Image (cartoon, rainbow, N blue to C red; front, side, top):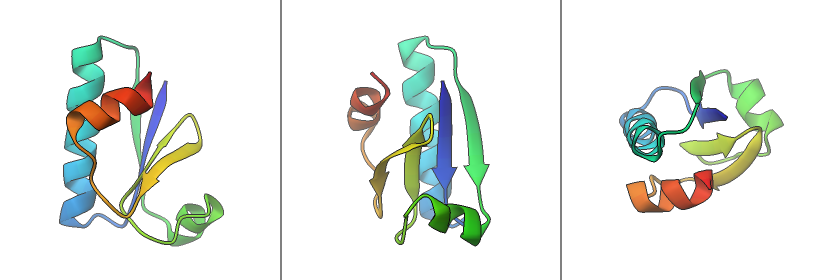
Length: 76
């Protein structure tokens, strides 16, 4: 599973990466976290607010940092 963190590296982006990594580790799934920081690439996802979380190329949330339980639901 490819988990993409879309954002320029702000504190919220870092927090989202931590939450996603923690959630995926607890679920014991095979995953790779990729940080997407290029604005053109972020916009190609249709994202206008960061941070955003995409799973296998599909945007699940943007503009906020979801809780760990919410991320687990997105990864299911």
